[in-house]
Image 1: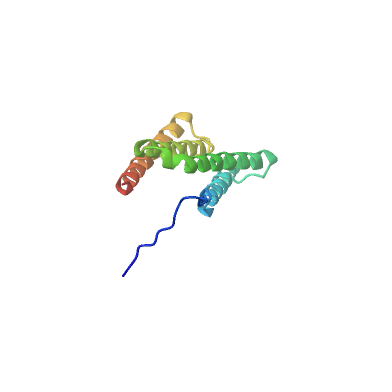
Image 2 (image 1 turned 135 degrees about the vertical axis):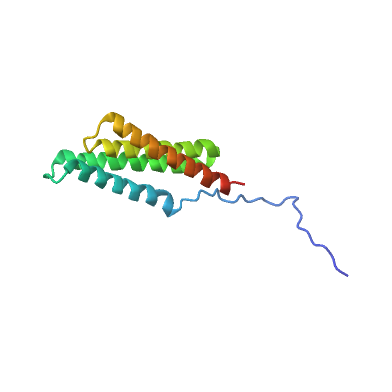
Length: 136
């Protein structure tokens, strides 16, 4: 004869599972690496073969830090955004950084804006396709 054994909840203490906050290394390492790349890129574009100055170093550090923080924050909130807004956010961040880096090489504001918008539109379309096809 088989019996079904259950634990009585009367008087039993419930234990809570600890809150899960996954902090994967990629969540902070990828923005950091991208920030370093953008910082060096900005430094070397503006340097243009000349001598290294303190202002150029600070330009690279500030550019890289700003992009790293922006990428980190976007990575933290992306799960709460609808697919369309998430794709537009990635496109906007890409457009801003490409336009900014292009402007550092003595290009006009109009040319930098056009290139940034073009690349940003492409990234938005690709990101929308990627997010839409992988959503449930």
